[in-house]
Length: 121
Image (cartoon, rainbow, N blue to C red; front, top):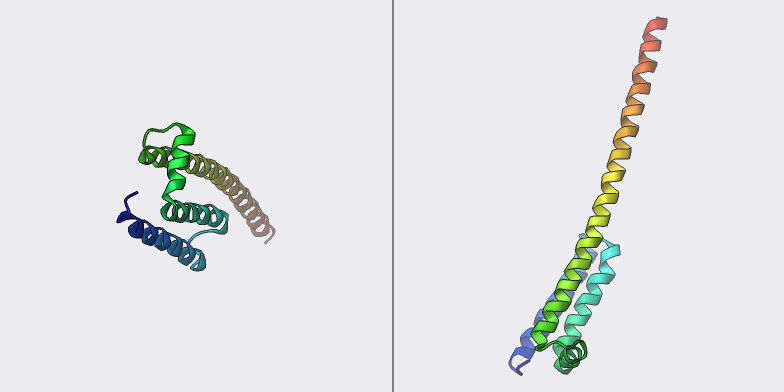
């Protein structure tokens, strides 16, 4: 990272962290995701403040360029998030199906009770 790029990276990282905290306080970001996003924000700040860390990680994983390492980790992160959201989506669909069936059964019971009540009159 060039010395001229460091202030931009730090400011961007701080803005990201500020946005995360703002969304948590406004209850726009659920607590279950808050820790994950705070860790992402902290990692971005760490990489912005210590560019040598990214170079070490790049050499450690065998990447050619630090931007390649960032791209690889970004892809891995996005795949993990996508898998997690797919799991959550599947669970919610199952819950919606179960609730729909329960509502249908309750409606049927109410209709039967109303028919019995009307027949007794």
